[in-house]
Length: 104
Image 1 (cartoon, rainbow, N blue to C red):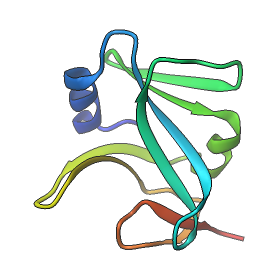
Image 2 (image 1 turned 120 degrees about the vertical axis):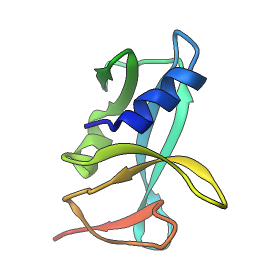
Image 3 (image 1 turned 45 degrees about the horizontal axis):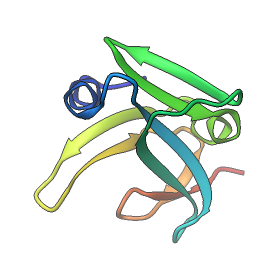
Image 4 (image 1 turned 180 degrees about the horizontal axis):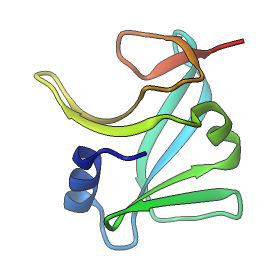
């Protein structure tokens, strides 16, 4: 799922051939971390979700860690960022929201 805030911001900043890429990597203070960036490349391992012209891409391996999550965009006093929220597979996360541990 992609929130309206994320859709609107992606449409504002992404070039026509760009999408928001989500990657999950080992690291961060909780074990895994989200990496979100604009990208213009696709691979055979990528899955694409599109809402109102805004595209989000995730590789199959990363998808296993974020199934059921919501892509959001938030503007806060100290930063503005795309983020994943409501990840049903995350056990706990750090205060910055960039890393998480997986439910066993």
